[in-house]
Length: 97
Image (cartoon, rainbow, N blue to C red):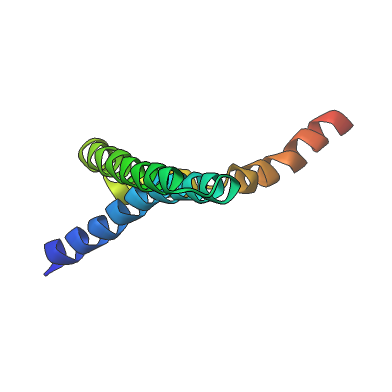
């Protein structure tokens, strides 16, 4: 049961990694289509979407094998600002002495 839960969480993380380049490429595709609306740009947009999906799948598989997707997202989501705030008073105290 615990392994199944861990696997499901990793699949959710994998999906998040796949969606990142996919949404980026779809955003570019939509911008290009609205700037130059034509059948050719529609094909280019679909191609960019497929390219984003392929890049996302390859990247997600690499991340899953090398780090684990949840570990990867936790590293990205970590906020160094919180650690910097706890260190600032120490620096100020050293300057005051």
